[in-house]
Structures are given as structure tokens and as C-alpha cells.
Length: 112
Length: 405
Image (cartoon, rainbow over the protein chains, first blue to last red):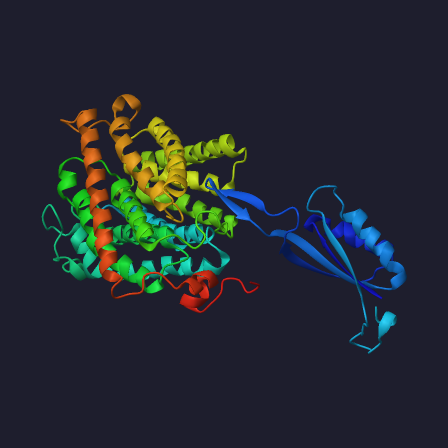
């Protein structure tokens, strides 16, 4: 199993969710986060004073899936989240040791 | 007593208190970090409560007692001698109502100063300073200008408080900001306003409340009140347009925070002149206020590097002073104003206006320095660095504005 963490632009969340649904991903966790990469921060101006905002708002989505689906899921996220502009985000793929469904106690792939 | 006048001033009193609670409080609270939102709201609320009491105990008497050219004395402390049937001299209003109407001005003036010291001041100092300031700085100036003191004898035009409210608050704010020092990270690494929407809501309440502030200062329900309301509104609108135009030219974007700041600049500028200029004067004063206050805001923060955090001096102090000076020109009947007083020409009126601004600015600046210097020996002035970083809400008040922080 793989655990996929993707940092994307906030307005791309719905597109990514729909794209993942088409490759069979049936659950995800999404959170509002702040961060920066090569995009660095952004400048905001209030009353003529410039404020350097180092951390830019992003969405973080987390999904767990079977090994066989992982590549297609990553591709789906990349296609849906891509605006071809700086700041589109990153996708991280981790090995996932186990998963447990809280209600039934099922483990492994059947818990996903 | 006149029922119509009384009804309008009863209304105006509510409008002006509404300017502070919650108008100014929200306006300021939206401009600070999320960790300090409650401290700003609490500053305004605490000032409203404590100044009300000190106004009854002593400040009203100093401002409006008979006294002499310099102060009103202590004869009207606790509204001594004022009953149901007492009519305020030179008005058609019950004195209790006059007392209440003027109290709302005494509340908002020290509350304006809050903008200078947000995010780093100790709450105890806010309360102590505001109380002493209202008694020693504000009340005597009120007496000089509105209570029959020497500036009113000289013919100073200050209809609703350009000098009394905005110059006193603006200059005192600048002095306190210098004494207190910059916020950590100022000017390049401070966080932007946490809620510009809240700023706009509060500013809109100020705009509406200002009808009571300026049109109420006619102390009657008459043509002067109608004209004051008209020029007040036009000036606010012109201030918005002027500030936004400056931002568009300089940054290619017109911001919400900028637009509402322009509104406040326009309103502060028209305040002293609102009883004497016509609609053209209102328009010009609003535009001038927006442009000049925009420029001074940048100058104070970026050139002088003074952290008058919410621009009290640049917007209120400068706006109030500018309007006080321009009143001498736009009072002219040829420009649609009410006309100069007998024996005055534009030059002599301008001289009186300038003298009023300078005298009150020096009085406010020097005494603010003295009061703060003495008070900080007894009350904590600035919070510790750790508290400043964590935010004042938890440290000073034990509560948080937002629970997802």
C-alpha cells in the first residue's frame, strides 16, 4: 500500500477530488495548510505598507491506496492540479505499512 | 427646551457611542493580528466604561463648568446642581442630555489613541493613561474650544472636534508610539491585518455614527444640522475616492482597507469645518484629506519609521489639522460656506486656526509625554517580548478570539 500526500493550490481541490474518484480512490483527508517552496511568499500592501507573507495558503490532501493504483492516482492529481504556473504544489508517495478500519477491525488493503 | 432639538441630540448621542462601540473597536480589531483581536476590542470597551465614570466625577466639570478661560473648575462635579429641568446654557437641550452627548466624544477620543499602541501595550497602562489623559489633556481643550475658553473667545472654528478630538488624539498617539517603541518585526516583518472585512464593517459604523458626531454638533434639529450631515457625507465619499485613486496610481490595485481608511480621512478632515462650509467645501476637504493623509501615512511609517501602528496621527491628527486650516478658506460665502464672522478676514481666520492647531498639538504632545513618563513608574508599560509574540489576548485577558489558532 502507498500513502500519498499532495500539496495543491486551494482552488484545485474539487478538480483533484473528482480526478481521484475516476481512478477509484474512495476516501481522502483534506486540510488547509500554509507553506512555501520555490514560489516563496507573496507581498500584500495595506495602507501603502508592504507586508511579506512568507507562508502561502495551500491544501494538503492525504490518501491511502493499493500499490497498483498509486501511479494512476499520482497522475490524476498531477493532471488535475496543474496550472503550469509556479506554486502548483508537490506530491509525496510513502510506503504504508498497515491500515485499520476502526469500526470492524479489518486490516491491510481491505481496510481502505 | 425644544422637543425636536432634544430628540435629535438623544439620537446623536446614541450614534456617537455607536462609533466607538462597536464601530471603532471593530475597525481597529480587524487591522491587528488574530492573537490581539480581543485586546483591541477590550481596550475600546474598557475606555468607554471608565471614561464615562471619570466624565461624571470630574472631567465634564473641567470641560463645561463655568470656570475661567483656562478650565471649567470643579463646580459641576457629579453633575452637581443639574436636575430634570436644567437647560444647558446657549442651547435648547436638557443639561443631562448635553452631558451625555459630550461624554460620547470624551469616550471616542482616547479610544482613537488605541491605534497607536496595539499589539504590545499592557492593559493596565491603557486604562490608567486614558483616564488621566481625559482629565488633564482632553477636558481643558474642550473648555478652551467649546466651553467658552480662550480659543473660542479668539474665534476658532472647530465645529465638531478637528482640534478637540482629532489633533489631541493624533499628536498624543504619535508621542505614545515613539515612547513605546516599534512592534517586533516593524516595519518589514509584521503580519498583515487579520480581518479586512471586520475593518470595513467597523468603518461603515463610523461613517453612520459620524452623522451624530457632526450633524449632532449643531446641538439643534435645524438647517445647520442638515448642512453638516450633507458635507460630512460628501467628504467621506470624496476621501474614499481620493485614497483609492492614489492606490490605483501607485500600486495598480484599490484595496478595501485603503478605501475605508480614505473614508476616515475624509471624515476627520471635514469634522472641524462641518458647521461652516458648503457642499463644494465638503467635496474639496474630502479629496484633500484623502490625498494628504495617504501621503503622510507613508511618510510616518516608511521614512520616519515610527510605528503609530494604525496611523492615528497620519489619518486623524493630520486630517483634523488640515480641515481646521481649510475651514478658514471654505467658510467663505463665495465658496458656498456660512461666511466669516464679523471682523474676520480669511488671513486673520487662518491665523486663529493655525494658532489653535499648534497650541493644542503642543499641549497634547507635552502632557502625553509627562503623563506616560510618570505612569510607567507605577504601571507596566510594554509587555514582555514573549507576551508580544504569543499575543495579548491570552496574556492580558485569558481568552482567545479564534480557537483554531
